[in-house]
Image (cartoon, rainbow, N blue to C red; front, side, top):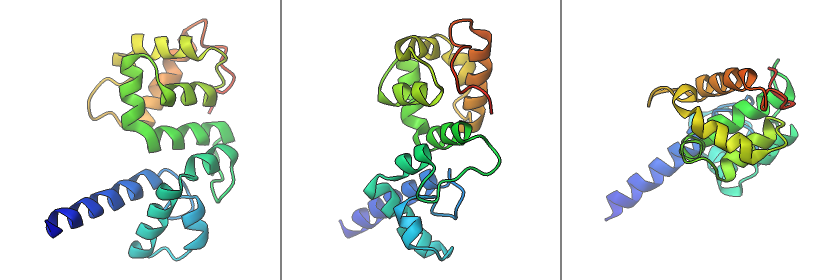
Length: 163
């Protein structure tokens, strides 16, 4: 039983660390944990990433450009989109296929779209083009989404399509 608990804890810590890799500060990503734990040493960054995930402040930091979540060359909105997609890829992909949900609505907002319902329907209709394979990476999915949105007359007006 203890072995199963240890494995579950390790998997959760790894999941937080992977989601935190979307940001730029260090291995733990950006957020409160990374602000408190600055040493870029693996075991310390696991705690930083776990704190970021547990406190749930990373999305706020990414969206607002605070908590060490500044962009590195990309526009602020493009960086927020990239980090959001990377951190929420699995849930976002499921909701895109289903045609709606909180992650799709959040991405619609980050993309600067005024009609989140039309955005959700679009992602469902174009899902196979946006996510062409099971191993499609988050960055590729976002690039495919931007490309398809640029071709659509209704969604090409979304304000934050440019990188």
